[in-house]
Each structure stands twice: as structure tokens, then as C-alpha cells.
Image 1 (cartoon, rainbow, N blue to C red):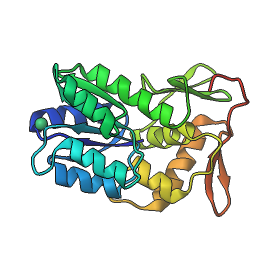
Image 2 (tube, rainbow, N blue to C red; image 1 turned 180 degrees about the horizontal axis):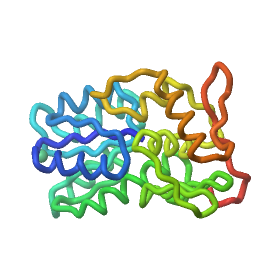
Image 3 (cartoon, helix red, strand yellow; image 1 turned 30 degrees about the horizontal axis):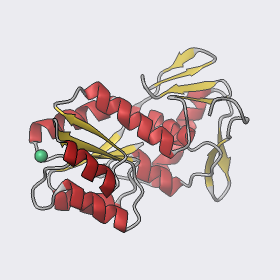
Image 4 (cartoon, protein in one colour; image 1 turned 45 degrees about the vertical axis):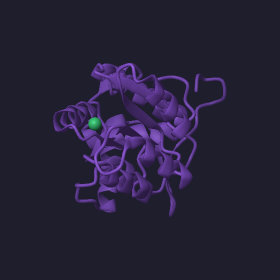
Length: 225
Ligand code: CA
């Protein structure tokens, strides 16, 4: 999964990016409203953290423009403490959730997880496919209860696929959701990651759909999805 952080406070931006990367996400960053708007308009993020008070263009205007253009990416607003009118205007502008500053990083992480799983139609923070369980809270993967050690790219790939169970995901789409902007992208490396992931999982979870991409089968109905 790939995220965007738009925050002009350099320290806070750095803390957010570090925490999100640590949690297993690919993360892009912007420090003003114009840059943030451009990235959110052109890159397919899974969620965006957006500060309201930004130079060049304020966060609410950025959000309104995305929504007017039909961008549905889940957005978590960063508001000032006690700024109730910010929250009201934020929801009206199309925000999905907010956290007030100063916040605990754990709360930001939990709210983002909730936004992303809801956007993908999952009720639980643990994603399950057969013997494979991916816990989005701890970024851990187990097979029949045994932990599997994955690299950050392998985890992102599996996490994206498991968020989108039952849908064929093209290689291009995967590339867009597992690498940050600065990464030297090459869609061939996706095949390498898929190969390694299959070997580590040792179970047939990640199917290749010839000419189209990859598929993780949807769980049977009523299985907690
Ligand atoms: Ca600010």
C-alpha cells in the first residue's frame, strides 16, 4: 500500500513518513498545498494524510479540488486542536477522518488502517486467505499460525493483493502501489518479488492470470471479510 503525507512542518512530516515506512507502507511526501495537490491528482495513493494549514494552497482547497475531479482516495485530515470548524469544513470538503494535533502516531496509523480496509471493503484488520493471515496492525504474516519473515516490498505486495482479494491486479497497478515516487521502478522486479513471495509462503495463494496480472482468491462468503 502506498501513502502520501502533505505536511509543511518539516519535523512532523519526517516523523509521519518514518512511522508509516516502519509500518510497511511506501510513502511519498509533499511540503506545500500545490505539490500535495499535484501528487494526489496524478498518483494512485491508497490513502493521504493532509494537513489543513499549508503554504501556497490550504488543505481544504486541495481536498475540494481532488473531490471535484472525482478522486476518491481516503483522506485523513490533520486539524488544529479544538478546531471544530476545521473538522466540520473538512468533512464537508470530502475528508474521511481527522486527527487533531498534537496526536499520537499510533492513532494516525490506526485511522489510516481503518480507512484503507474500509475502502477495500474489509471489516477486520486481519486479512485472511486460506492458511495465510496478514495482520495490518503488526504488519505480520503467518501461515497456519507460523510467522513468515518478509522484506518490505514483499509485505507491501502481499498486503495490496490481500486488500484486493477476488480482483485481478495488473503488474502496472502493483508497481504503482508498492513503490514510492523516488524508487527506480521496473515492472519486471514485481515478478521477482512474486516469485520470492510464493517460495516463502509455500502455499498457492498468489495466482498468475496469464496476460492480465495476479489474483488472490476471495474468501468464501461469511468468513469475516
Ligand atoms: Ca501546517
